[in-house]
Amino acid sequence: MTENNKTIPMWQVLLCGAAIVTLSMGVRHGFGLWLQPITQAQNWSRENFAMAIAIQNLTWGVAGIFSGMLADRFGAFRVIVACAVLYALGLVGMGYSDTPALFTATAGVVIGIAQAGTTYAVIYGVIGRNVSAEKRSWAMGVAAAAGSFGQFLMVPTEGFLISTLGWQQALVWLGLATLLIIPLAYGLREPGFAGGAKPQRDQSIVHALREAFGYRSFQLLMAGYFVCGFQVVFIGVHMPSYLKDHGLSPEVASIALALIGLFNVFGTYIAGSLGQRLAKRKILAFIYLSRAVAISVFLIVPLTPWSVYIFSSVMGLLWLSTVPPTNAVVAQIFGVAHLSMLGGFVFFSHQIGSFMGVWLGGYLYDKTGSYDVVWYIAIALGVFAALVNLPVRENAIARGHAPVAA
Image 1 (spheres, rainbow, N blue to C red):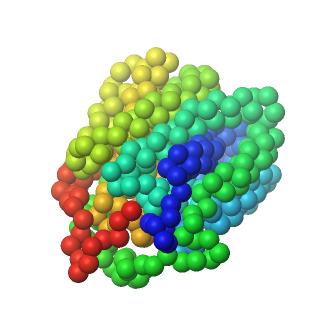
Image 2: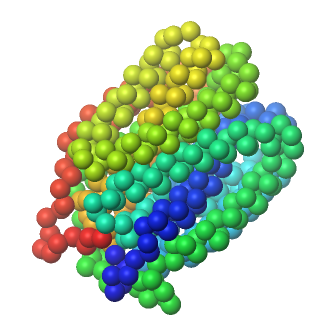
C-alpha cells in the first residue's frame, strides 16, 4: 500500500490499467501477421524474423525485472510514460529496418524494453498496492481480460492496416497509437509516490529476492510460467505461417488470432474470479494440462478452417488465464511491497520460454520444413507444467514479521 494508506480508487486503477494493457498487449499479439510480409519483402529467412521476436521476448523478461524495481520504488507512472515513448520509436524503427541486425535492435531490444514497462508486471504492482486482497485476484483477472480484448480488437485492425496501407505504414500508425498510453498513465499516479516520496519497506530488495528464490513454491511457479511463454508465443507467432503452409488463407489466421483474444477475455476473467475461491495451484495445473490436450487434438483431427477456429477458441480460454492466479499467488505468499519486481522475475522465466518457443519454431522449421517437433514439445511441456504447479504452497510465507499487505 502507498504511503499514508492513500490509494487510487479501484475503478480508476482498473480503467486506466486495463486500457494500457489493451493497447500494449493488443499491438504485440499481432506481430505474427508481419512474419511473411517482412521476410518476403526483405528476402530474409523466417529464422531472422523469429530471432528478433525471440530477442524481444527475452529483453522484455530481463527489462521487466528492472522496470518492476523502478515501479516499486518510484511509482509506475514514470516507468509507463518512458516505455510508451520507446514503444512508438521501436514500432517505427521496426518498419524501416533494412538489415536483420537493425530489425533485431528495434523489434527485439527497443520494443522488448517498452513492453516491460507497459504490461502486466508494472500494472499488477499498481493493482496489488491499491486493491484489497479480497478483490486482488479478480482485479488482476479484469486487467488480463483487457489485454485479451486488446488482442481481439487489435489483431484484425493490424491485418486491415497491413492490407490497406502496407506493412511499413501499418507499423507507423501503430506507433502513434501506443502514445495514447501516456495520458492513461496519469490515472495510475499513486499518492504515496508523489513528489518523489518512497514508501516504507519492511524488506530490502536483496532480502526480498533471497527470500523468494530460496522458496520452493516460487521456483515451481517460475518453472510453470516458462512453459506458458513457450506455448503461447510459439502459437501466436508461428501459427499464421503454419496455416498458410497447409493451404489455408491469411484471413483464417487473422480470425484465429482474434478468436484467441476474444475467448481469452473470458478465460482470464474466469481464472481471476475463481482464484478468489479455489486453490490457485489447481487452477494452474488444470490450465496447463488442458493446453496439452487441446494441442494434441488439434494435431490429430483434419486441418480445416473450422478445426482452427475451435482450437483457437479453446486455446483462447487457456491463453493468458495463467496470469491472474500466478501473480495473485506471488502477492499472497510474499505481500505486495515488491510485487512488481517479483512478478518481473516470474515473468522473466515466462520470457525465456517465449524466446525458446519462437526461436525454436523458426529454427526447426528451417531445418526440417515442418513445425511438428515444436508442437510435440509444447504438449510435453504442458504436462510438465501441470505437475510442477500442484505442490505450490499458497500460504503467506512465515517471517519474523507479517508480510506487507494491501
